[in-house]
Length: 398
Ligand SMILES: *Cc1c(COP(=O)(O)O)cnc(C)c1O
Image (cartoon, rainbow, N blue to C red; front, side, top):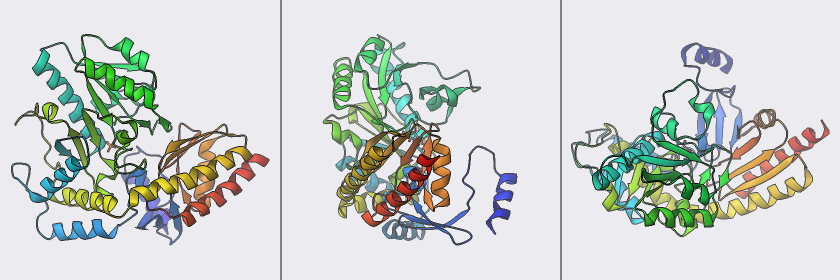
């Protein structure tokens, strides 16, 4: 049944994705179903989006209730759902102001524009450079693509946006060496997720905070993937005992409803004055209602602690698999974002998992990425581990 739809999809949709050969129709918790009624254990959660699981009841209820009142009115008005969502983000983070938008790239664009403007206003022209990391990922708009430290995404789209300097990740000396009188910000992910799940060291982040703080250079954290409970804290920066100046959020912020946000300190955010930046849909009442429901559920129901516990359970067992199978080169991550680096063809292994009804993602052709819903139970993790053991054993014999 789904073959016909898949063919149609190939005919009508832009060919920008290597899609899995299934058409999904329904989701519930950690499970999704295809058109033919097959069930899959979803360890990808819509690419780290559905942190509370698919179609979470509180988010659904908030969405339906808001939809009956007002979809959209524009940011020319004050709207209660948006203000409540902003208040929650401020109450639970270092930030004091929130700019809402619709995606991760857009949140990062806002951060980049704001950093330049902040510096321009305070120091005049010429202080516009942003230091970014090799192997990073910040989005697909021309500007965030330029900030992304991976050539493969940039090829053929030149000329790129000027003003980004790339340095190796986890190397504070490299950042120090790259800072000049032109630098206005340092921007990075605390876990390079798309890049293959590389975790920033605590000393590195503390050093960056020191370096940037001394020179009034903004520290921008791209928490589009690591934020909203993913790492076992509401925001990943909480692991590092520092506060950034700006933080971008998106992915899980609306548990599947498209919404992004830039959260920041007052003195930086207030450089955005009327007319300097905008987004028509940004934080509209529907989106904002999902943000509030998502954050309240995450904070109120112990989901974040559960995430940390499940992460420990998962990594312990993954490390035993690593002992057993020499082609598992590394296991790394935090909370419920894990990378399993293989020395064999990861895409082939990913396809094996799909055949066995498990959805996960392979990045860089060799790193399996697990970003399951944070509400995943230990029974579900054990289902995955059992299948993994079986697939790895088969791979071992080859
Ligand atoms: C996914 C992602 C983005 C881009 O978000 P979009 O919503 O796809 O624009 C940016 N940064 C990081 C760290 C991401 O994981």
